[in-house]
Figure 1 (cartoon, rainbow, N blue to C red):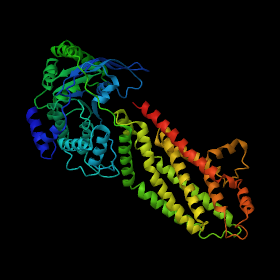
Figure 2 (figure 1 turned 90 degrees about the vertical axis):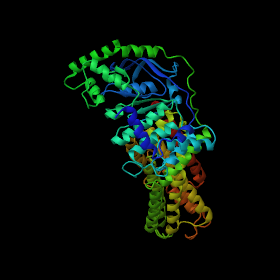
Figure 3 (figure 1 turned 90 degrees about the horizontal axis):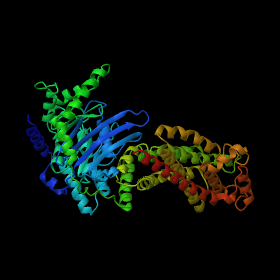
Figure 4 (figure 1 turned 135 degrees about the horizontal axis):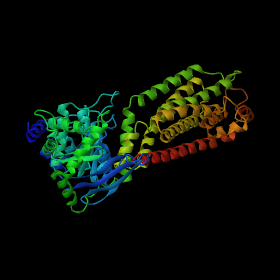
Length: 613
């Protein structure tokens, strides 16, 4: 089937799904045509000196869908990253990347979209919810404009049928199909209405029909006036014919750049004709591949082909096209949404994610309720006047401190690892600042990691039979909130400063052990050796436990002679080396801990994200 007929058939079939209507196309503003060119790009690994790209040049025009192809190690991904000014850490880059003749460096992010191979979404949101939030970050203008843009993109990319379906998480929660997820990736980028669109392996993991549908979508986007470039690995013959231009790379050099038909003629002339009914892309890629164990012969063949291309009319035409690119104004880049818009959109996304995450929301409430019942039954109606009554109450209070800490901290250690790849991508796409994400995500955990602790404390409080004066009860709740928020902030800090989730978990265990051992129950804080006692001043276990015991024993009517005798209270606290005057200083110190932990966590996240480009 001819290329145009194949495209027409696919597009007509796809339109039946509501995918490519002219109405949707017209809803998106016309883009400013942009010519992307690159001249003599050389990329070298700084440490080893190995060259990944060796003087690669090329150009692609508006309205063209270009495919970058080649065998593994040919340099496709390196070229794409160089064009995007991404993932170049440890590499030395020379040459120029131009948009309409202008060298704009990392500014290319603002005038282009990048649909990466790895699909990263918030799986608890529906397709439309996710796009609505993306629109608030990508589209400047009124709510009506954003709504129209979302509807246009949903129609253009065939996502209307699944717009109210949750995206899902692979292996955890079933959601949209692989083809729909791939088109959702394009949809997010199309919200910005970019003049240039980069796609990394857009057909990987898709069946033949969905792969053709995705390429048909890219072709339609290109023919609407955009410049579209994608890397692709061994496309089927019908896909190969759908590209307007192809660029074959081999050993970091240009083996060919031109139309698919011209590529077939060139390789026939080079002595590698394509048999009838054989996939031309497979033949060309196999010809350019470096076969292990036969490197000398393969390298010699690649050298001959690249030299032949340079001296051919196709190579000469490429040089003329690159040199003929006129200097025109670069397209206007998208502007980042203001801080309030960033914060409100990210906060909505984070709250929806937490609320719909069954392993987080419901599990935490159930867990804390069960633990509250367990502690309440273990210390049920403890007789304060009994010989061991005071020690039992103190033990119960310390256990509550531990339960507020351990489950909260380990539960929140997933704060960054799950989000980190998405945050890095969206930050370097220019969607929002690190501070907007950090504050909104941190705030989204506050209600959950407050309510669950209060549920446990209220259940245990009355079952144990702690003091029931109104002031003591609400003071106890305030202290429990500060303890849990200290643990939460510490967990956020640990997750952001650690290079990975396993490292964060491995650090959390020993650190919590040290902090709990110096918390005041297992060892008297006033009798610890000097070389270890300093740890207690970094422990919210110590301040939380001290505050709870001061609050508990400040007024006890159940023990004869205690009601108005502060000396009995002071003597009880003195056994633990605590002081009744430290209640509100303890509260203030825990509040300061929360602030400091969050500040350190923010700095750690900012450094990691900035280094990730």
